Amino acid sequence: MVFGSVLTLHTFGRDLKWNPHIHCLVCEEALDTKKNKMKNFYFL
Image 1 (cartoon, one colour):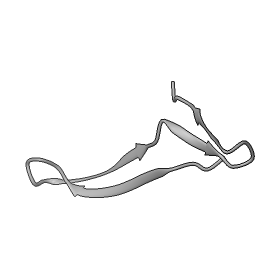
Image 2 (image 1 turned 120 degrees about the vertical axis):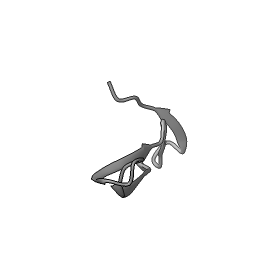
Image 3 (image 1 turned 135 degrees about the vertical axis):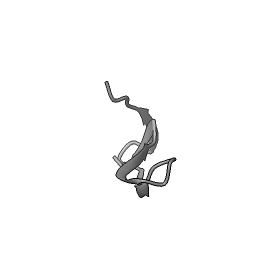
Image 4 (image 1 turned 135 degrees about the horizontal axis):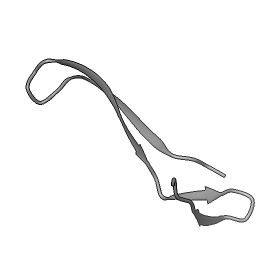
């Protein structure tokens, strides 16, 4: 299965004060390379 995600590091918040935090984008489907089809998965 091929998993996809993107992480970004933000060092400042909306009010421009020091507020380091991480944003994570995760795909809802993954590619199963053995069966050559998409699988759905969810985080609870």
